[in-house]
Image (cartoon, rainbow, N blue to C red; front, side, top):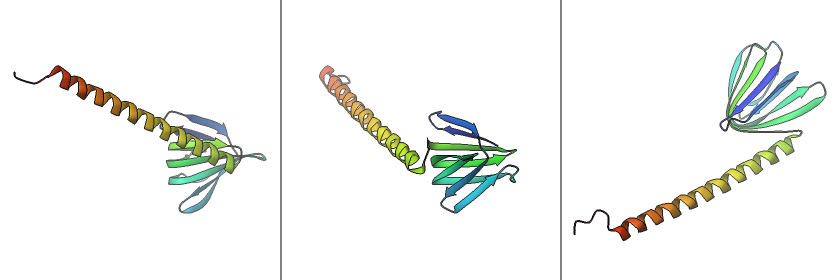
Length: 130
C-alpha cells in the first residue's frame, strides 16, 4: 500500500508500506492491504508505518486519515516523521517550539510596527482640522 502525508505548510511524505497501526484517542487500529475504506479523525496521536522489518513513526496533530484503494492518505495540521516514536515526538516538539518562537517574533514585530505607525500619525497631526 502507499501512504501519503500532507500538512498545512505543504510538507509531505510518501512511501510504500506493508501495514500501518494508527493510535488516536479512541485506541489503535491496524490497516493492511485491501482493508475496507475508512476515514478517521486524529486530534493527537501517531501512526506506526511498517515496511518489511523497518518501522517509522509519524506523529500527527489535528488530522484526517483516509484509507481507500490501498492508499493511506493523511491530511494534518502538523506531522513529523521519525525512525522511532521518541525521535518523531522529539522532532514534533522541536517544530512546535520553533513555530511558537516565530509567532512570538512576528507578534513583537507587528506590535512595534503598529506603535511606530501610531506615533507617526500623532506627529503628523493627521486628521486634525486646525
